[in-house]
Length: 301
Image 1 (tube, rainbow, N blue to C red):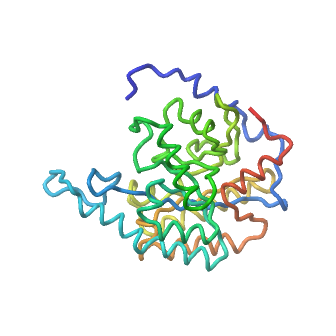
Image 2: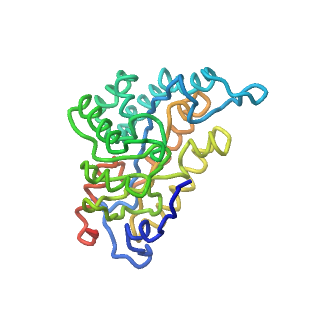
Image 3: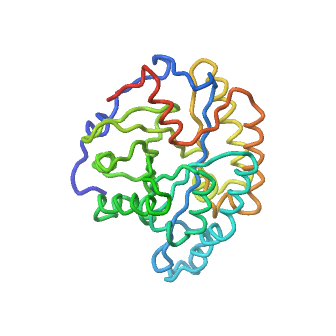
């Protein structure tokens, strides 16, 4: 909890309230109804510390370090689950956006290089998997993350997803000042919106806490097929509404969750369902950003 009262006008002042029913119409590149993008999240969980999430509670309620069971749960995702994602997406000609901890670029270099070779769109995801309000030097962590991605890929990331979608009041100002062009933390719309920062405008590309396997599997504990069932329902409604005003659908996945053998086929089923429809644009975060900037009605904040 903050030691000082938070002025809500600082947050609300980042963007104007604009009901989707009262906005000028946007148009996707070929007049599609829905833009669908996938975010693959790759994180570095240090075995020396408490795990960001747990699948197995400590015996008799006594936390223990190192937490081998829960660290290994995550590590499985990087040893096996990630490679299932790569196969599923590549087989369908899909490119993901790759939200990666800066430190993971060296810890999991083979996976990160494979994502780069697949032409995925790299997104900064913090330097280590730690909430932004627990990072003593946010500017340093942002710069270190950008530098690590640039060293591996040859280019700085254009987008940013904070660990756990966490921000302090000045995080977005720091991101814009370091050249980040879009963020995923503000899950408040089905279309991109422009946010105001001290360093100029930054775009919020629609991310999701609904079609997100951390929420569905790790938090809510749903069955393995939840990503398919919920994803189909989400897509169907956005596709219907998109006939009048185009929408953006995000699918957020983690190798240790949806990359598990009992869940991966439901991700395949969801993609195949979506690909079975006309008037769908499969895009990356950067492609959505570039498209949005072409719209004459896109506000500049």
